[in-house]
Every structure is written in structure tokens, then in C-alpha cells.
Length: 224
Length: 296
Image 1 (cartoon, rainbow over the protein chains, first blue to last red):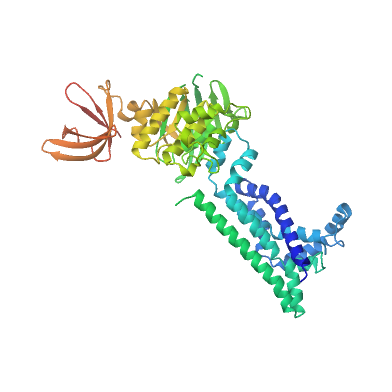
Image 2 (cartoon, each protein chain N blue to C red):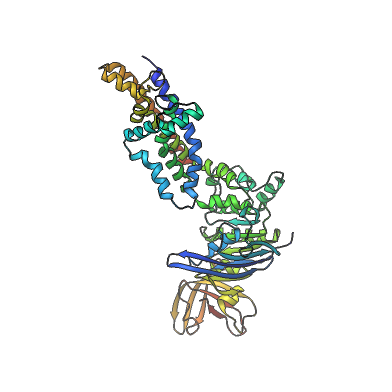
């Protein structure tokens, strides 16, 4: 069995999760506590990947990333980076595609905390920054875990977007989900099954761990 | 450390369940006194505390603390809550769940502050034994004491208490009132306390301020506010709550809770007409007979 697609999938998912975590923290904080006009617009844009067919998103990303159009040309000129049919392109697309899976749990976690926790920290002389890292984040561990796992899992499960902007270049953009599709098309069911089974088992084990950890966390915090 | 005097003037739009209301309050807090803030829910009591602590910005207002300005919308001065030196005890205590009792109290220390302050406060609220516990392992009364100690760690100029004892049972309440009185003396604190409990007001407060619809409706000593100026108002008065009353001929036999104990006494029917179960009253000593004043 060729492990390259699996390895590529996990590299893509890890990198996407890492980048999104850094990106989503300030975004979630802003959405949870900020008072501003146009909130509905921002929330709608972030939520788009939830409902949009992946092929639609993939199609527009393909146009945007293509060096024959302004944005793609600009990226290539300034950063020397081609985003179509390349691994960096997949990462960028995955970050956009999985954005709501990271932002929403974090936002909900922050909003679920009593306002008084923040206020207590302020009146104890702590800045918004210190309050965020020392009080708010440690108390949404469960939301953080959920966000990380959902993002990772959603990226692992990506198919349409990857196919649209990545194609299936072995070692570059041919991730596990695409590999499964290829093997099935070639009527090579045992090979497809190998990839599918690995994804299936790993996904199940990860979710199982997450839920048992979350339940334990809840029991400690709110003993019945 | 000497106690602090506050002058508060605030105008702020409140949104209440019954629509928008303009809060308009002018209120001095005398140095070293305990002022009780009372009134129906939605009157703006918690908002007033939060405005003083700097957790919300008012549309208009001025707060001076020993002559120092915390807030002056006219001059565009707004001292942020981090610098205000207002200790706040929240209704839900707002203890940090992930920190131990000691860490909760020490959280307010700045770099270079003497950590001995934490031990001193742990001792003052008698929680030294439980310093390594997490908040969820404590009883309501213990959590309340942690919140009190934590609010005092930065040596605040004013201590703001938002219905601190409402969730506790009677005996625990009394113990915590003792703690508040003790801390009040020990640290020469100026305290503003939101409460609905008349017994608590009479026990703790030097002055009481009643707020309704964002306006101060009554202000003065607890006796003056709740009993009115009375010709016999010299001498001791006991605060009590009627538990039951039974008519026996020309008299009414009353069972009442006074100072945490059940007492029975007889009153002439004419004097006891308003003493229905649940009512609060002040019982005064007088030369001929006891005088009972029903509160509100």
C-alpha cells in the first residue's frame, strides 16, 4: 500500500488546523465580545463553507488562484507561489473551507463563559490580553478541543475542493480521499478499502477520545 | 490606611424588562461606611456597581474618589477598571474555576507584590486549610469568602458587593455578615452592598439607598428609611419577621423570627393589625408597652 496519500492528508490537516487556530482565536474573540456594525455580514461569510457545495468554493478558488487572473498573478509575482495544483494552494483552500469549524466552537465557548469572569479579571488589574490567555482560554478547554478536532476531521474529509484546485498529483495534492476515489474508478476495491479503513478507524478513535475527555472535563467542572 | 470617600454622579440609559429607563443618581459614599443599595430588580443596582467599577461607561457622569477623578465625561476622563482600585464581589462570585483558592486570590497581585498578602487574607477569611482546593470543591459560603478575599487583595479603595449572600442559607449568611463586618473594621473599608434582605441591611449598613427605576427614592439610616422618623425612636430596636399570628380574644399571639430565634409575644389586636406572616417589623422598647412598627 502506498502511504503517500495518507501522509499527505495528515500533513495537510495538521497544518490547516495549526494555521486556523492562530487565525480563529482573535476572530472568535472579536465575534464573541465585539460590538460593531456588519456582524451579520462577517458571520455569514465565515459560515459559507458550511452550506456551499465544495465544488462551488473550489471553482472560485481555482479562478482566484489561477495565474491567468489578477490575484493569482499577484501572488506568483510577489511570493513566487503558485496556488493551483500545489500543496500550499491546498493549505490555503483548506483554511478557508474549514474556517467555520474552528471559529464557531471557539466563539460559542467564549460566549458561554460568564461575563463576570472577564470583569473580575479586569477589576483585578489584568489587561484584556492577560484575561484572554490566563482566564478565558483555560476555561474553554473543551471548546478548544472540539474546534481543533472538528477542523482536523473536516480537512481530512475534504474532497471536492481538493479535486477542483489540487487535482491528484502524487505526493503533492493526491490526498487520501482523492486516492480512494481514484482506486474505485480503477475498480481496485481492496486498495480503496485500505485507505478508507485507515481513515475510518482513526476518525472513530479520535472522536471517541475527544468525547470521553470532554465528559470527564464536564464532570470535574460541574459535579452532579 | 484611612478610609476613602466617594462622590458619585451618574446619568445612564438602562434597558430594563419594562423598556428604557434613565438612571440618574447622585450619591456620596462616606469614608469608612457601609451603604446598602436596595430596590426592586431592574432598578439598576448592579448597573450602578458596574459603573462605579468602570466595567461600563456611562453617557454622563462624574466619580471622584478622595478628590481623585475616576470618571468625568465632561473632561473625557475614564479611568479603566484595571486602575480603579475598586474591589468587586460578583453575585455569582466569578471565581476562576481553573485556579486554586490561593491562585484565585493571588491573581490580583502585580509583579513584585508581596505574596504574604495572600496568606494574610486566607487567614482573615479562615480558608488557609483549603488554599489548594479548586472552587468547585468548596461550599457556597466558602466560595463567597474566597471572592471576598480576592476582592481585597489589591487594597481597594471601595468594596462593591453585589447581593453577596443571597444564595446562602440563614446561618451561613450570618457568619458571612460577621466576616464582612470584621474585614470592614480590619481594613477600614468603604463598602457599597446590594441586598434585598432587610435583616442584612439593619445588621450591616450605616446607610441605605433605595433605587427604583434608576432614581434614588429613599436614602438615610436604615431606621429612618424603613421605620420613618418616630417620636419614640430612641433606644434599642429589634428587627424581626412575622412567622405566624393567631387571634386570641383582644390579643394577637405572634410568632416571629428575631435575631435568628423564634419568639412568641402578645400584642393588643389594634396594634397587630398589619403584622401578617412574611411582614418585617421593628420592635422597640418603651416605658409602657412594646411598640411595633411594620416596615413598608
